[in-house]
Amino acid sequence: MTGERSGPDAARGDEEYVGLGDWTPETLDASGEVRTVVAAPHPVLSRAGVEVDPTSAETVRLAADLIATMRVSPGCVGLAAPQVGVGAQVFAVDVTGHPKTVTVHGTFVLCNARVVEASRWKPGREGCMSVPDLTGDVKRASRLVVEGDLPGTGKPVRLVTDGFEARALQHEIDHCAGLLFLDRVAGAHAVYQRKVYL
Image 1 (cartoon, rainbow, N blue to C red):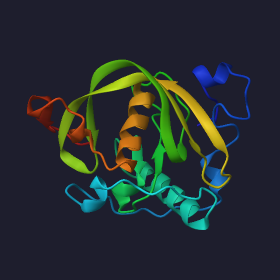
Image 2 (cartoon, rainbow, N blue to C red; image 1 turned 120 degrees about the horizontal axis):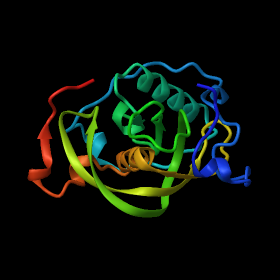
Image 3 (tube, helix red, strand yellow; image 1 turned 120 degrees about the vertical axis):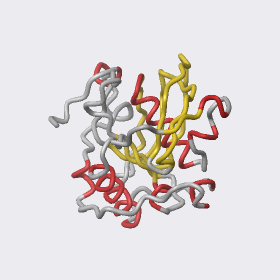
Image 4 (spheres, rainbow, N blue to C red; image 1 turned 135 degrees about the vertical axis):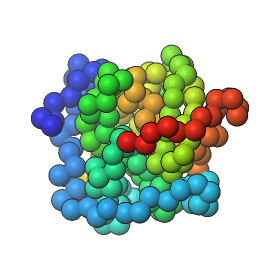
């Protein structure tokens, strides 16, 4: 990975707020440990996570662990703190190389993230490491603006994204709010047995 960014943020000149700036996983200055991913109906998955101090040593360690766990999990493009048993508003995303990706910000972690703009709603199939046997059709915004804080630096950021990365962000923000993709499907007709898990 070169660290180059593509998509809406790359064209913006507001380095103070829009995009990740010079943040990379190495900014955490911590080697993450792989954690066990919990599965539904674990109670942590249905509780809203608490806001965190993005500069605390505990948050930095959690961020590094999320990246480490995501990287060793085949097919994983995002992982939230509740999925490793921690009721906190922290998640990692990396959609690099996914065939449905348009905008790519590389590997990043956000704390206390919230959606501030959402538009162009489209249905799409989703799966989840915490619901390993099922997939479902979920309607999500395909254009998204998210605000949050970067772990380690605590810098507030605004990410403008679309397509698959927008879907991944909404999926992980839902985890931090105590929601699974199953809570977003239109009904039982939109839930399917997973045939293959990468």
